[in-house]
Image (cartoon, rainbow, N blue to C red; front, top):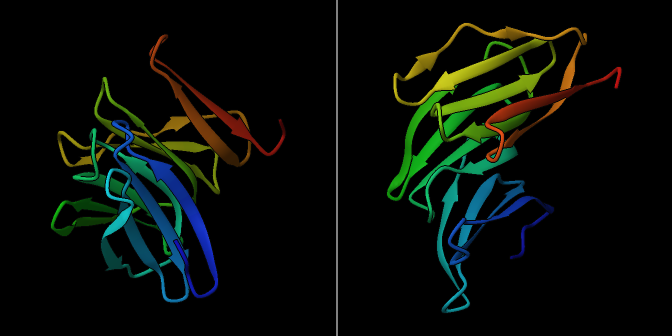
Length: 150
């Protein structure tokens, strides 16, 4: 799991058969298979990855929040789609019930990219000036966000 400078993100797939890692300089994504203890594939990516979300049970659908204000959606074969986020992102989560990829960042707005429709929904607004984190509870079907003012 070596990268020339540093590894940024590491996430297990929900089925625990794969480990997805991202690193910088040159920005790359590496996918490891835990059953064989080997690297499944390695991909170059355009920009540094801030957050990643595994959208399926294995590595066949992955979303990357990049430092250049883009969300890249990857399928098993490689990059499938790239879309620009209105503001710089800091965190990203996936809501499986609504099929929304939720992004928060350098504003008080919560951007929701609906993967079923392929477009952004109207943003939700927060009382905080800037948002830094987001999380989703599958048990309650609730979204929680945190801002710079606590």
